[in-house]
Image 1: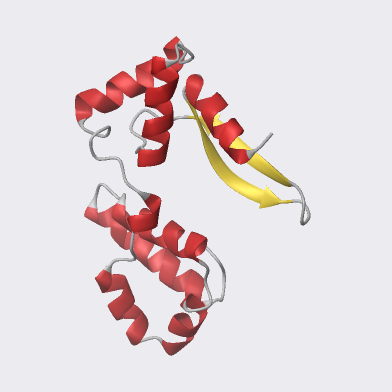
Image 2: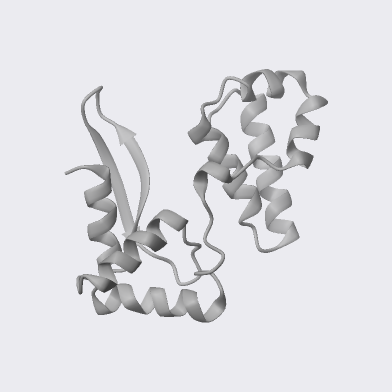
Amino acid sequence: MTWDEIVVEVLCWGWIDGIKKSIDDQAYLQRVTPRKPRSSWSKRNREHAERLILDGRMQESGLKHVHSAKEDGRWENAYKASEMKVPVDFLDALESNSEAKRFFETLNQSSRYVIAHGLMSAKKAETRQRRFEKFMGMLVRKEKP
């Protein structure tokens, strides 16, 4: 199965793709889990869900998450992963920590996205601050997020 096929199939049932782990250069494991009640939607997954609904493939458990997201605004606020940028305050903090900055500059787009999404999706200031410190600590220790 391809990644796109996995994503589309699990969306039907109200599940979401998670962490992908390489086995070797030709195969990987894809973690899928039930979607949490307040999880955000990417524009890509929203488009998949809309197509599944039109095709009559979306199951009741998947529709429940779509309706909930439409009611509370998460549907309209879907993000586009390629447009998500690391917040300026985090980049500014990197300027005062040369080790963390050097390691950050080696990260690929996927790892930078993890940082950006983690910081931008926090609903509370305390959560954002905790994530901010966690990511900064990881970079100092040369750990990928």
